[in-house]
Amino acid sequence: MHQMTIAELAAELRAGTFSSEELTRSCLERISRLDPQLNSVITVTSDSAMAAARQADARLRQGNAPVITGIPFLHKDIFCTEGVRTSCGSRMLDNFKAPYDATVTARLKDAGAIMLGKTNMDEFAMGSSNETSFYGPVRNPWDLDRVPGGSSGGSAAAVAARLAPMATGTDTGGSIRQPAALCGITGLKPTYGRVSRYGMIAFASSLDQAGPLTTSAADAAVMLQTISGFDPRDSTSIERPVDDYLQQLDNDLTGLRIGLPKEYFGAGLDPQIAAAIEAAIDEFKKLGASVHDISLPNSQLSVPTYYVVAPAECSSNLSRMDGVRFGYRCENPKDLQDLYVRSRGEGFGPEVKRRIMIGTYALSAGYYDAYYLKAQQARRLIRDDFVSAFEQVDVIMGPTAPSTAFRLGEKSDDPVSMYLSDIYTIAVNLAGLPGMSIPAGFANGLPLGLQLIGNYFEEGRLLNVAHKYQQISDWHTRMPDNF
Ligand code: GLN
Image 1: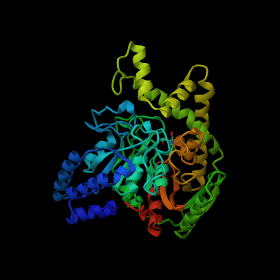
Image 2: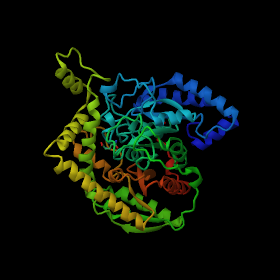
Image 3: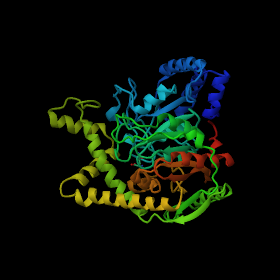
Image 4: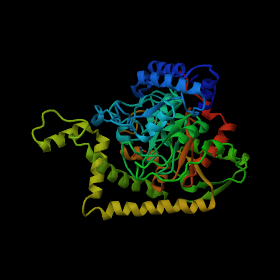
């Protein structure tokens, strides 16, 4: 069962080969048996999962249930889940049970998908290795001494180990695509505004988007279809109909114009990854696509720009964690000032504090023009590069990450080298574009990802391009040993 795609599982559920109750029990059993090695799941919701599975079985018997009905998923612990701990990987919210469901949570539940539990993540989604979590690091199922990437590392590791057929992630600078690449699975960050951010704990509000982590593009299409769409409760959600992603999956790729930005193949890229990416791109030529050299001249500005914009927004968003309204409160505060200082001092970890300090500094009077305003201007240039590129090509391709999974601890004392893990993904968030990572081979025995970047609202095209590649390759079907 655990090796099946969503489409296969959906067919077997309808054929009566097994029930959602049996499927859910089997996933829960795999989590309890295998996850102690990974630490990818931090809350298991067995009872509510079994109850939801029984309801899904009843709905399936009635007919007309959506494809996703009865299919289990794991949910990144950044999404509010009514009555279930929603920690965001932080001590600050270790005791927080959300009083309501995020829109993404509600849409999955309403469609009959079964939430198995919540996944580990970098604290407040700040990180590229899952080592900043209050609940300890997640391990990569391909090599337990290595990181799974981050910040959606728990979700990516769990799907790679086939603990669940799908999981949610969020991506502010690469947190869906980079862990997907490092764990050998498929991940998609939608266009900014395509998926509601309501009830998704905010890191950097102008960059955050939720998306699917699955083993294949066809599965990602099912999940994205379920979670996308306008939400009046999110003022940045876009009022525009959702395309039929499944219907576009098999479109012919003849005439597709692929752009290869020269900035994505320069120094700093592992030569084995470069070779695998070039081999994958050759496969697209066989599918009828043409390949064009392009340039995104302001690419080198993206990491520094992001590390002003994202901390600035996080310093504002995290000010609500004050020890008063909800979350962690220090013991025996001597006055109000002491309560704020110690609650925040004890509740946040070092990376989160570093970001809050950078952001507060960049936004302070006297520095605002020099940093935040300047970063917003650079952000516009980065976006304009993509706008001109999409006048010449339909999809941009390159590596997702400059290296394969690194060792636990290898970069934890060097924030800048950690930040560079997202060098190819961050610009996509700054521009608000959709981006995807799909498995495209191995280097040093570890999986690597091919990144696809599309024009605004072209999620359907990305899924189509990825699906066509997955029909002629088998990287996405490879599984780590021992799982
Ligand atoms: N690794 C980047 C950061 O630490 C991106 C994280 C994300 O996308 N949430 O900010």
